[in-house]
Length: 348
Image (cartoon, rainbow, N blue to C red):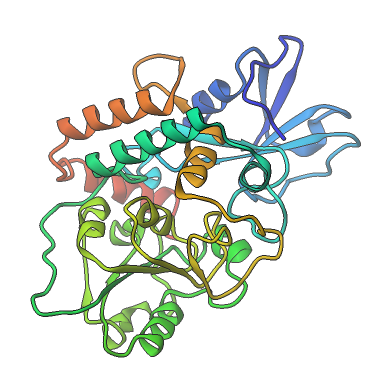
């Protein structure tokens, strides 16, 4: 398991195929070490350390004895989308796998399965959870408030959409892997509920492609939302049904019932209704233990105003400060920037 400590100054971390805008965050993950950015795995010597993004395929052949560390965005990331190139305030570094790959173990899964959390850690996690909920914070902190629960409805179920090309579905959803498939399954299981479908914000921004058949979502739900704040929305729904969406974890922190049709990192610990079980996850966790492992022990947090690592509590304060300066409405230049991104990167 990768430890959150400064690496010896003699350590060289080879960072493979990272875009220029991610490099400063990568360096912050490996304080004390020298980070060398390379484009080909063939350039990484034996018995060294190799950092890669997520489950990205490795270009080239990895030499003997190379330790692979996988990086990904953390769960409290930014005010703004990653596809808009908003800098992350948290990243995870995993020495066994990555948190969304349910086909094998990860550092987060090991933390959740084995750590005996102290009373002090659990109290800290509870306070952190309370601050997140009170502040209405989520991963991206985008969207507008104002959604109203329909009057006279007994049960409202939120179904969050995902980007169907994302690795979290390839590696964490062994059965249903499409948004329309999820909607159909939720409707069939809950014929009388009021279903609210929220497409992924990257899809709404037209930076990632709609899922197959997603244009027919209204045939299976009662309401399809646009640019609505997830933190605001979660307050007024009764349940959340997901494939692997982080919205399920955000709902758990708000003590909402969550049903998982995939195997996200927060499923399998006795806190969710799991349609597909994971035999490696046998321990029963409290919500405080899940929060402690997922938000305190696993990620790194970075300041927006300095090169320092910070605590999750400090990251919350910075996120709240930045969001307070944002109107929630995209600035005039945002769509122009996205047009350039669509041309340069394409919509995947």
